Length: 474
Ligand code: HEM
Image (cartoon, rainbow, N blue to C red; front, side, top):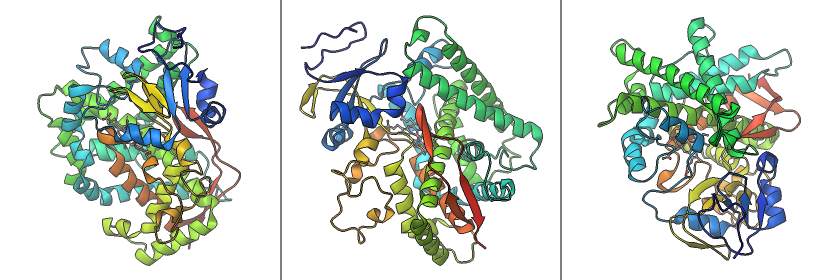
């Protein structure tokens, strides 16, 4: 058995010959593929002061973890959030749906996420989301310069994320996509977007910084995190209190209000917990939706044949350019294939983390219960052993009649995670992305110059500038 030099943080003993590397910011952000290449299909990482993590790259190992029939799957919590929330008992009675475990987690999930996950609720959102999407398109059109380039697209998609999350979770529009909205409201929305970004950056630094000193002394990272959490809480409190007050007069239609009301109506829960649930939902969606949309537009713009096939499908289903219905989205099979292919080749969340609940044999190694494993789905999705033409953007692979005989390990495409702890925003986001891509493709011929670069901020996000040009279709 290997002796682990960091046994203060070790929860188990480790297999003798499992490769390991010390993880740092740089290996995390750009080196996962390289790590697989250099160290093989299973790699143990150690970071000073952090719990060791075992990365799994093999399809069989990933599928075994994903299939484990857990009642309460354990995802390692974001420690900084747990520490902070525990320090504020006046505001939080638990760690929240994202970080809580066991029966407590199951109860939160059951009371808070049921409505967001219900297909009928999500379908009823389509008309309201379509209005958000149409405002987004109008904003893009207005912001283009003479060459049809859209400056500050990264910022505009963040506003889209905020507006769509506010529509879903709060049941109301903030108006950050609409230049006519009162400037105070816009300021408020912009502040919220900034706070969420600070929050994610502090999470990233607390996880992947060279030394997690914040655990021992109040560092800048911890200060940044607490400031973002405090501001976030104050903003959401204001929304929730206002919404409760003018519930009678709000212009939001019933289906749109339903998710918010289901959170506020949750039984046996203090109002503080409901506010923190709203915070968790908004934060989870805000950073992810916009980045995923940019990845989607980039791949479509870079593949003119895909773009034309997509346009042909959409124009045949929605010839008038009028409203888009749930039925249209269901019939648009190529549209769905394009989104799915983007999930495969460039997901925003590249891996899924779990703590093993019992010992497991993975890639020939015996891992004890308590081991933190990272299922590296993205790397497995771009491996020729699992997908034919794995590094090419080929949406047709998802239309079985087109690619008979192609290797396709569909289960590995898990941009929203897996099992009963899967992202509760999955249905909503997928529907939103279908709607967005459909309207973008109907309105514009998209062109992208150069390559899109990405960076790691807890999630993979695009790194500007984003060289997207939008030429009017008519
Ligand atoms: C493109 C957009 C999104 C992506 C890529 C994404 C991805 C993920 C992933 C990978 C997980 C971990 C799942 C697991 O451990 O198996 C997760 C969890 C979660 N997501 Fe999302 N998400 C997105 C949008 C949203 C939205 C819109 C919401 C709000 C409704 C949301 C709320 C949550 C919550 C609350 C959790 C924690 C669930 C739990 O632990 O029970 N996400 N998400």
